[in-house]
Amino acid sequence: MNNLAFHHIIHNQPELALSLLDSSLAMNRRLYTSQSPVLLNSIYSLAKLYEDMNKYAESEKLYNEAFVNVQKIVAAYFPSLSEKEKGQFWNTMKDYYDSYNSFALKRVKENPI
Image 1 (cartoon, one colour):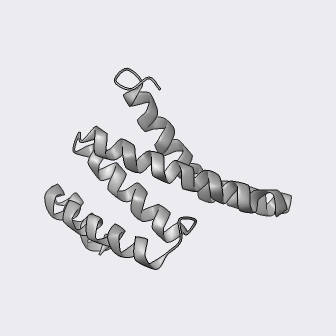
Image 2 (tube, rainbow, N blue to C red):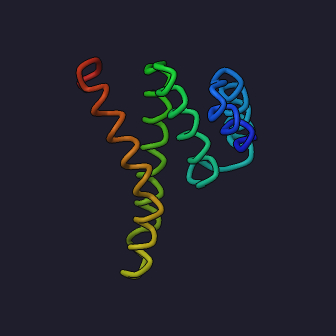
């Protein structure tokens, strides 16, 4: 579903993409735990689409949920990793932090907390 949603995004059909990403997220919530990378990716994809559609309130809820989940993943796994694994882990998680921080900077005037 995500691939089809991205196809619609590329072809400037955000409403069709929104429906697919929303369905994908609902399905992934049923299938995966909050610490699953699959669920995390679904949340971030939908948050980014809402952001691109200027639906910031919806986007913010999802970004905040995803950020909490990322923090749980880091707390659960990072301390026990080797230095090499920590580097690989960071490379995997970096985009989530960057997306969240970028969105937060856009929203700081409307929502300073």
